[in-house]
Amino acid sequence: MITSPSQAVWPRLARLLHRLPPSLLFVGPDGSGRREHAGLLFQALHCIAPDSDLAPCGRCGPCTRICAGNHPDFLTLKAAGKYIAVDDLRELQSSLFFKPMEGKRRFILVPEAEKLNASSSNALLKALEEPPLHTRFILCARSRARLLPTILSRCVVVRFPPRPGAWKAGALTPWVEALLEENNTRAEALLSEDGMSFIHGALKTLEHTPHYPGLVTQADALAQGEEWKLELFLDLALLWARRRALELAATAPDEAWGACQRALKLARLRGLLERQPNRKLLSLVAVEASA
Image (cartoon, rainbow, N blue to C red):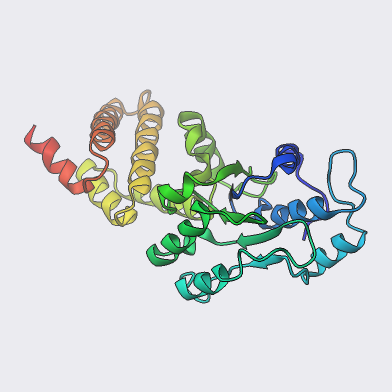
């Protein structure tokens, strides 16, 4: 567990201590301190001697017990395999309405909320809709994209920025920065481990597949039906085509013109995806071809 709260996040968490909401969702890339701050928040709630910023002292009895991982009121719901089992949630629900054994509140931490499947999500939703008086839920996720909208609507979202240097991946850095400038509301997806890996694969595809029809086919294969990945690939491909056109303008005007044409087609396809978000990408290509 980390011992010093993040100055980028802690002030907001400290304000929440005065009136802790029933459900919190900590969103941020791996290494941003989501799980650790769930423990710090629980410590701060029970600490005997917090500092002026309400951060826990880390030395009193409650703090040391929480750090050691043996406090009976701080429970963690982990995935046994690929998903969080609905049976584990149901077993947990049977004890939710009892009072905490030692502390002021009981915390239920779900450190990998993306591993909730349909059944376990619905089981958790029932608890979030009728929250027990003394229990608080903290869900942690890299992105909100894989959580049910109904669960999101029940949670207060706290965003965790990446730690300095944690997400810089060499040649990827300028591309990520450019994408953040283009659409900074999607930072949580871009800076997640999954997002960074996807950007890396997309850049390889763009380097080896310069022609527009091939790009579209590869985009569909890379995205595997996930809408946010289709959008991210098209944004990245559009940015790549623009840069390519600028690079070639002085030395290879014909190639630069071809890059401009690809950029226009990609921009049109991106607009189609925004208007018809639930359709497969290849279906959008068919619509464009017949227009």
